[in-house]
Length: 267
Image 1 (cartoon, rainbow, N blue to C red):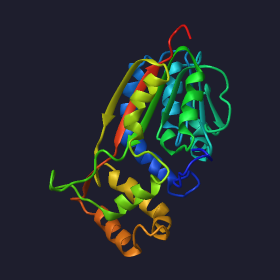
Image 2 (cartoon, rainbow, N blue to C red):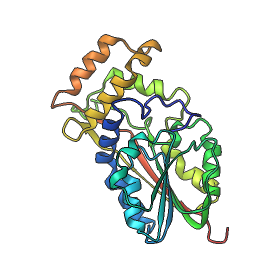
Image 3 (tube, rainbow, N blue to C red):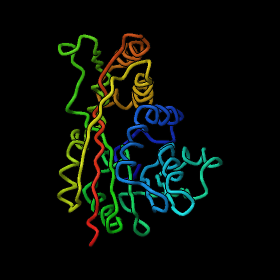
Image 4 (cartoon, rainbow, N blue to C red):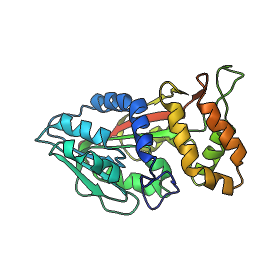
């Protein structure tokens, strides 16, 4: 994450590790497939922005091998460092603020997941990341569109709208674009990238797959801030936390857009 953000779900919180574990369980397999699709190979120099728990950075390091390298950055690297003992030797971890810090050199592949949505100066940050691509290098950004799909029992009677979820969404998107992940395809093309593709994936958050755990961590971590903003009451949060414990709970996740594009080889 970056200092130029409105993201309160930071890595310093004791529940952050649980969040990263659930996000990895829900979305890492898709990220692996997307990165394989752009051809990640032995010898590539890669950058992972906002590495979180480090699961994708470690996977990338294994794929590029000893002849390649992966630089994994985050404003707070404590969760990445926890797995440092088992990390490949070609994985470097560094504190870095994508909003203001220069990027070191050029990369064959730059990836981030759930980062740019929260950066206030995200447009400038995107431009700087494109500039850091080597000619022919790939940019892969995965981010949420939390506005296009909402739980609606009229469509699917098993979906469970929760007032706390809507209040958290409103709180987190006060200075964000709720459709950001969906807009990335257009931004990649506008920034001059070629071979641009995008796919969106949503899962049904349940107790079984860990989606309910992810929501619980979010509710518990920033519940007091959402209450202070006048968006929800403590009584409603407690009621919704109890609902997350029920086996019948189900809610569609935000759509995770995975967008890929390549810097033209001659540029």
